Image (cartoon, protein in one colour):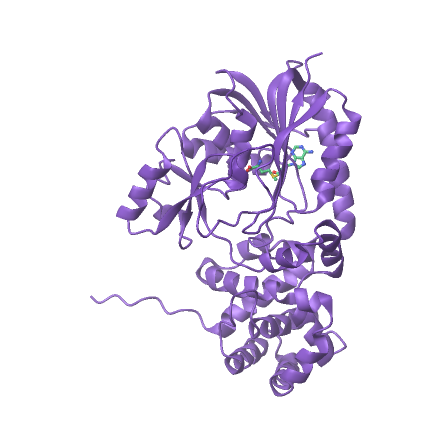
Length: 454
Ligand SMILES: C[S@@+](CC[C@H](N)C(=O)[O-])C[C@H]1O[C@@H](n2cnc3c(N)ncnc32)[C@H](O)[C@@H]1O
């Protein structure tokens, strides 16, 4: 019997699910949660449309405001915004469909799910096609439309990164590469590259950012993890290059076997696993979210690694600490995720300016609570996947004022999601491998703190 490929779902169906996702994000839910509710068969197509729409949402909102100053009901609005955004380029991605096709399919989606509004959707979108040039001109001077980020976010980046803010905003709309970490207990980068090549998967070795040593793998094109040789057996994991900096930084020249290490915000377990791949540690993996902690368990099981897992609030040390100091602590603190917007285009629309202040306070409380648990001579790595200085450099500067026994050791500091990632190989560290083109990592801030022996 001849097998035929399963037909791809009609665009109108994808647009309807895409509108669900955009409506969910505009109502404050994460895109991941919204996509989890999408039927598996249409999830990839819906995700692709939703990513494009969220990368172009600022302009789409401004256009809809021009076309229909009174907002329609939320789902119809989301459908309009999706159709408008997807008929424009987003970052370096061209519109994936012809504009007339998108209008026809949007009207079809409206007829199925909001029949009373179908004529309105048709009228608005056809007017956009007719008056496109004038409408685009009218929104061109609106920063939120031009940069597709909320105004407060643009202002914050402008303040924090006066030279790089435009590049940072552009970087958020690029597609992120898929990077791999080879399990050091089971292989190395050259050997795994050979396995990828044997499987017809194009990839290259890349150095970790900032000249801090270590190599990883970047795939030419993203893949489903189960297509990666030995993934299920634990030979390899998916992890951004910047995130792969944490474990080597904490381990430094090496910790003695059995050293007591705390990963205070461990879920889903990427950095905890990396630590255990590199060293024999007595690792306590803590996370306040018991459901997310199960993911740590799954990650460690797949990789054949072991740690003690505990669901607890890292700040409430009296509730869980046994009184024995840790030799090293990783504090990968909850943060705005402003450094990983290219992977999570919803983040910029979900955050509020007050979130950054609240997160900075939580990060400070965590540092203050955990510092006394570190043994004299011990090391603490503070990490956030943020590009806002309030969650990085400023938080660490303030902590150093409060903790007289803390020294800031040579650290990567701020890694920006740019080809020139902002890290200049501080403190005389050699530059990394001359990768060409240089890999673009997620945005992270890393500080290595050392506790003085009095
Ligand atoms: C950036 S993620 C950690 C990522 C993880 N280190 C990894 O590499 O896979 C931050 C984590 O902090 C956890 N968290 C937030 N507040 C916490 C608290 N008060 N105590 C412990 N964990 C907390 C969140 O549940 C989340 O899993």
